[in-house]
Image (tube, rainbow, N blue to C red; front, side, top):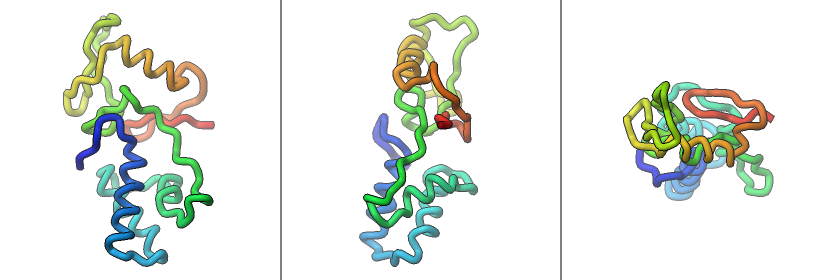
Length: 137
């Protein structure tokens, strides 16, 4: 699975779904099952978030609900597509932070904190779900 840096996994799944149903001429009656299959392939999880499934398999752009709001940007590893940070206990603003899963460099502690604040991370209610942070509204 290869995604460009900063790309949302939800949008990558949607693009793959749209491309596949167009190229393979998958009938609308099979879209939901096919979307679930693509989500499983992208995430590596057996369970599928029903809200994400509804968003991907929705037949009309106008009827499409908003995607689930996950915090990402610098927090999300562009390789693993999860938010699992290796943060030293004595982290300073210039301390380099790495993905705890694959070891990829994500930025300095200051950059990550600033990014989290820009996404509204100081206000609201959040849920940690399978390595991703979702805003609960």
